[in-house]
Image (cartoon, rainbow, N blue to C red; front, side, top):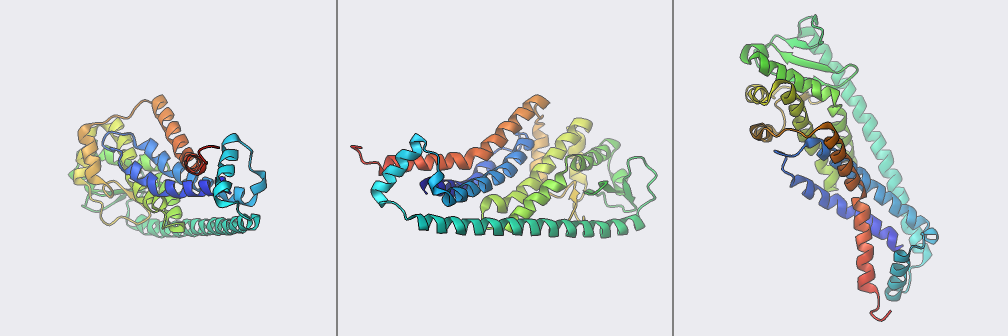
Length: 317
């Protein structure tokens, strides 16, 4: 039972402490891609650790007899005189019920959210196509006859970029190209899906800081990631000009807009002109970030086991 409780507590601690660690990263200089991986994989790791803890509670007699676990169980028994198997089984069954409830709720929230987003998208696109110019450009961009410089992207099959004619009136060609490159980066990177996943987890477990804070963090990070793509294609100066002149008001709730989230942070990053690492280095950093985030709850549980062993073992034993 000790190992199971350590995993459960490790998952809880990770769910509360990981956001504080990730929020301390300087986004003006760091690559946002590995942070996106860290947020999403750490949520999955916390859930996996909690699931493993519940499984161990249901199978207390089948815990591997590793030396560390044997010592911890022996020392814990010296203090607690053991726990009745019925207690372990009861707690395990309660855990299974909670996990099943969470899984069902997550599935319901995800399906319902997907249907709602699709419905809103179809409604918005129907209205936009009525007022937009006929699509004659090969890029498939919907151009609206509006003087306010505005652009946003909407997920779907295929994804859609919507822009106003005010972009071409108030921005130079390089800045217009940067805006469009930014929105295409959202579609190519499946950023709308990442935000939707984070939203579904938040709705399912809003009381855990890791899950509650993930959607806003992911929204900011995907905007930074899209800026990097646009800056690589069009230059940092063009992206900065676009951010200063494009508005983020009046966009659909299911869209990602050029100037909607974390504008000040993105301007600061562009001022530093922080360039992302090469593809190999990015792949390695994302892999390491994902691995660390996934195993952190398990490492926390192992640390708790070691602490229990040190505290509860009789000195002469």
